[in-house]
Length: 127
Image 1 (cartoon, rainbow, N blue to C red):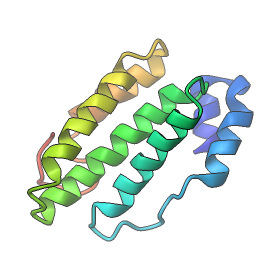
Image 2 (image 1 turned 90 degrees about the horizontal axis):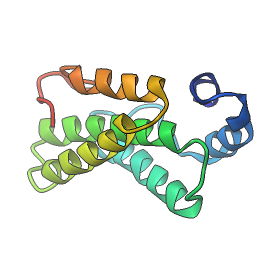
Image 3 (image 1 turned 60 degrees about the vertical axis):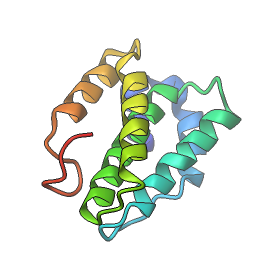
Image 4 (image 1 turned 60 degrees about the horizontal axis):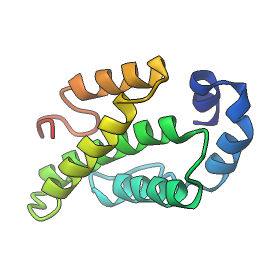
């Protein structure tokens, strides 16, 4: 993830990318549950609150959107009716932030993310 941030945002973000990737709690397997990807999205929120001027913010909004989309799909698959509408709203908010990025790579990837029929669990629809 560190190298993806540097490739998309430039070498000047390397120190911040390293700081983030050293502490972000990425689960190796979500096992079809929403908790893993939602927990990762929540960590992004925590990072953004703690470091409001972070130079990796555009990438973090993209990461957050991806994780919320995966969480949404898992919540739909597990029929978590109280959760998936919240995740759909949060996904749209994060996606809008990524799409509004002045970095054309971030906005392009965000557009592509939104057109995918699924990112984690097939058949759950697009939020």
